[in-house]
Length: 293
View 1 (cartoon, rainbow, N blue to C red):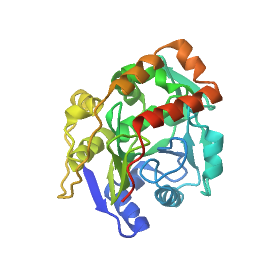
View 2: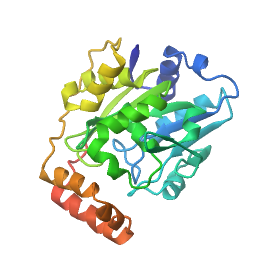
View 3: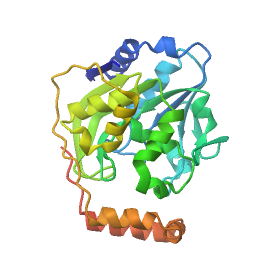
View 4: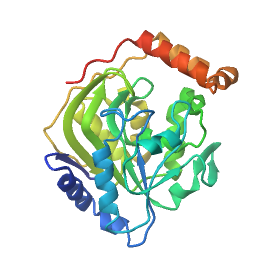
């Protein structure tokens, strides 16, 4: 499956070029419903969340084809969709995907609208202490409607494979305008890297992105697993590389994952005060963010 790479000079031109290369007008017919899934985790920040300018550009382009364009996200323990909506300056409708009609697949509660729309997946190029890399496949984890998604962290690879069975976005645009490594997904080194990638196939996109980041697929086991299940071999060529430092799981990560498997702990974390304290403790133990450059 083909994967395309573009260094960004003019953002709107780059987005339109990548959309044309993947043949987006074959995928989005006039009048179709389009659901755009960005990567948002708490507060908006370059390198951590989908670039707002990129999201706006994709919304504007999709609306030249259909008026039925929506941006959707689910709530999570540390993410309130209502507050996220207030921070969006975009001129389109937002859907709280935790509150729409549900279908269940292998015990996962997922939004039915994701199977009834043309999904545009816009992940961020960054590392993750749980999965090594968090790219296109990992962004689909955000479709789970449960507020406390951490209960799936101990079986993250199999959970992601289950989601892939029923939600395979036909348009995937990787946001590498800024990138994050060393820790992730919300702290670490943020760099202005100035690129986008695109593919019709999310597995191919992730494999190619690992190549760009000089990341061995064994460091991102969910991508390796998906590549074997689907026999994916990306057609991709660029000399552009950035050295990504993939985080190594430490005792804090292992302790956090263990606690997240416990029902009592998960219930306690639903309390805003306890959740706030837990987040401050975690940030203190992880240390300060590496300055941007």
